Image (spheres, rainbow, N blue to C red):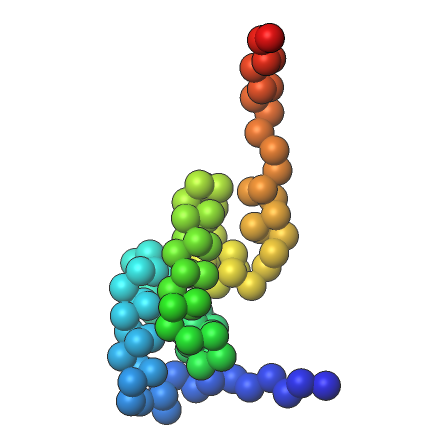
Length: 99
């Protein structure tokens, strides 16, 4: 069984701290001070690296905006049911193909 580790933001320091601060610039203003979100991003930075974490965050923020989700970004990231609710097919019917 894999051990889960909480990355304490207060002790990050060094290059990871500057990468985290860079990531937080992409986060909506209302979520920037969310410690749980900061810890999640710090963990992903440590495990996935800067490029993958940046891509993940940009994709999720775009999904959140398209979905018109108004809750915490952290909740949207950690709870797939929020994301899946947005992935439901549109109710607009496709135009029929003409031959």
